[in-house]
Structures are given as structure tokens and as C-alpha cells.
Amino acid sequence: MAEPIVFQDKDRVYYADSCEPLKAAARRGELHLRGWKRGNYPGEPLPPHLLPRLRSIGVWDAARPQSWGLDLHCNEGIELTYLARGKTAFEVDGREWLLHKGDLTITRPWQFHRVGKPHIGPSRLVWVIIDVDVRRPNQRWRWPEWLICAPEELKRLTSLLRHNEQPVWQADENVARCFRNLEVLLEERQPAKSETRLTLTINELIISILELLERAHIPLDAHLSTTQRMVEMFLDELPHHLDVEWSLDGMAHECGLSRSQFATYCKQITNMTPVTYLNALRVSAAAHMLVQRPEASITEVAGIYGFNSSQYFATVFQRYTGQTPSQFRDEAGDDGQAATAT
Image (cartoon, rainbow, N blue to C red; front, top):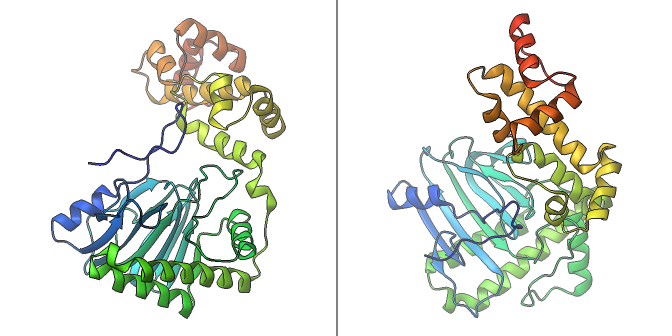
């Protein structure tokens, strides 16, 4: 088995989705699946020389409702999918859609998304994942050399994809035709013998998507590709990772910044230093658990939310709430109501 693709830093490690539920459903004969891939994606391995940085291309055909779905994940490339038939649920960054026949989705490497909530509907879906050498929104995109688009065209496409995060579009006939052609190539099951046609079809698909986005006259937001945006995304995710023993160095490293750069952006966004903001999140979450789980010890709650000692936890908790954890829990119990820290 190929090694999982790691595409984040050591403090928070993410892996490219390997689509294990999809693979299992195919093995059980619940759907038809064809794919060519690198890493742990579904399908047959692509030859090393063939279209470098094409990570995955595939199609599934589920003729009936499924009992599985793909959970929230990121990919290490730009992912393009096309729903050729049917309907299925789709989510990106907490926003939900019901995809219909003819819908095109575009997700960036840093966008958490899933198909099916919780299950896949009867559907035929085609996908392509191309690594553009970015993991964060402020990094420079590098398209594969086998894309023959003019540099100015790729520059325009990059700008359109970096400066808007709309994930769902209605495909036009040109885009739909490209995906249909990819389906035909996939059914031949011989990527090496299809290299020329595969290269031309993906190039045509990229150009067709550029034309589709340009016709839409979408408003572009340069803020979406800034360092500040990247820090905002990290801070938005931080409440879900409070058990990590974060340090200022670790948080800055996660964002690819120096300590002083990260601290400056954090202060601009939250009006707090990074450590103050982190502790505020931890205390708020711990206060909720103290009330909701009265059987949990103070030490247990402290450890769950990243405090390495109950004494330090008590000191920080009292600084933010004016009470010790025990006093807070006792008062909330006396009131008979769930309290929250402010």
C-alpha cells in the first residue's frame, strides 16, 4: 500500500483523503468504480512519468442509494468533480448543497469538504485532482508543465480560483463534454495508452472552466489569498484542536510565519495575543465541560483542553472567569443551569 500523503505541518497533520468507504463499496459490488491514481486514491496506479502531479482521476456509478459517504477531508490538489447523473449531498467549509445532474464542484487544497451527508445518493460522479503545489491560500500556485495553456490564461485562472471560494457551478456543454470524454478514457483502463488523449482532454477541461468562470463575472476578493486570510482560517479551526499542546512557535509554524508575524496578525484579527486567545478558547470549552460532565474530575478536564497541570488550569480559569473551576461548577450546579465563561 502506498504511504498516505501528508500535506500539513507537524503540529496538525492532515492526510489526503484515500476514499476508503468508496473503495469498500466497490469491493462489495455496490457500485461501479474506475480510477487512475497516485498515492492511496481509488484505482490503478499511474505510471511515474505520466502527467506528473495528476493525483487522481476517476468515476463512480452508484445505481442505488449507498450506505456510506466521504467524511470531511482535504486534498493535496485542486479537485474538480462533475455530477453526470443523479443527486447527492455535498458540503464545503460548513455550507451544504444538494448536487444535481450537471453540477461542477471546485475545491481548493485547504477547503474541508465531503460528499454524502451521511450517505451518497444514486449518482454518477467524475473527478480530477491536480496538485498545484499549494497547501495554504497565500502560497504561489504552480501548474503542471504538461498543461499547454498560455501563461496568461493560467494566470487568469489562478486569480479566479484564488480570489473566490464558490465551490458549486452549473457546468456548460464544453465542461460536460470534457468529463464525458474522461469517462470514456477511464473505461479503457490503460492510462499509458491513453496519455495523449488524456493530456488533451484535461487541457481542454481547464480552458473550458476558465471560460465558464470568466463568463460568470464573479466578484473577486483578493483578501482570500492573503496571509491574514490564512491566519483567520487557522484561528477558525483552533477550537477543534484545543487538546494540542500549542506554543507560540507551533502556531506560527502551522501558518508558515515567524513568531512576530503570527502574533501581529492574531492581534489584528482577535485583539488578543495568541496565548491569550488560545487560553480564552480553552477556558470557554472547559467551562462548558465542567457543567455538562459533572462526573469528570478537574484534572481530567484540564488535560482534555491542553493544560498540563490542574494548578495552572485553575490559575488561568480564575483569571478569565473570576472563579476557580470548582467554584464555577458548584455555582452552576446550584443554579441548575448550564453556565458559560465570558
